[in-house]
Amino acid sequence: MQPIIPYTPLPERYSMKTFHVNWLWSIWHYVPTKCRLLFYRALLHTFGRREGMSSVFRIPFGFYVKLSRAPSEAPAMDFVRANTTIPVPAVLDCIEWLQNDDRKLPYSFGPTVCWLIVMRGLPGKPIRHGEENMIHTASQEQLKNLRHDLADCINQLRTLTPPDPSKVSSFLGGGIYSFRIDEALRPTGPFSSPAHFHSQVFCTAYPDYPDEADDNLKRLIADRPHKEYKIKLTHGDILPHNILVDDELRITGLIDWECASWMPEYWEKASSLRSSWIRVFTWKDIVQDSFPDYRDDMILESRIQICYTA
Image (cartoon, rainbow, N blue to C red; front, side, top):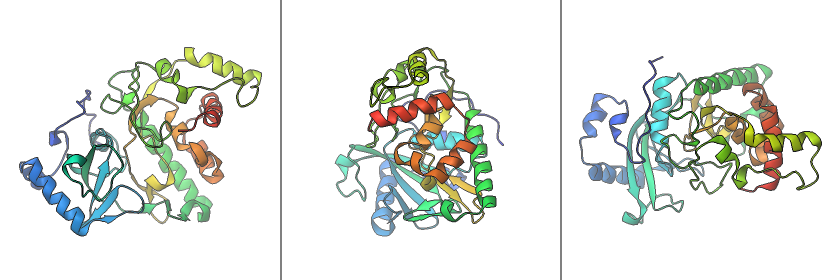
């Protein structure tokens, strides 16, 4: 593993100098951004093949292009790849793309700006792709492999030191992108502390709604504003469609870092059991075995998700 790279918050607009690429790509980066963008647009329009319903497109020579809402996705991937052994796609280029400048985007999700990320592909295939879910047909040995590798990925992320030990923010220090908070993935925050974060409506559990809470739940609701939380780097969307595996369910890639943020320590587990995923029992068991416990916080999360619809 490479030594930890000192981290300081970067501006929401950043330079490709932050990325570790080979000399050919380094030379390519001297080509003006506008010319590189024209080239990538031509590749997308001519050869781009969309991966399912995602914002990711396969292009020739084993490369992929993602159109991301989050300016922090590419530098977060680069940071994790440099400082852990988690298999993360290598970022080769990242360019701001104004939708107002080009009405022929192959994919549109509303914002006027997206980030075109060029990256290398990884081996393996998603655990869940369309109607196929490898978990449902996996042997106990395969599930054991998945639990082991997933726990290792989570533990490595948790070793990375936040730039601010109290701030809840995106990887670059800006607003958070989270499907648990907003299914449309609009940024919210940042927040000065976990207490500030937990005071928002999307983290509010009510003692009398939808029914009267028991004494333990009332205590948890009352105690949360005063509870101390560590801030951890969080992928924010660890679900079967974002985990690449081989035939033995060994993890070969963790993809889609759009929601990567500095969050309260339990948030990785909460986001991996959001909405209907908490009712997928095989996946729920894997999460329970692979993630730290956070029993009290997950009791609150279950209550919050009844009351709050992202």
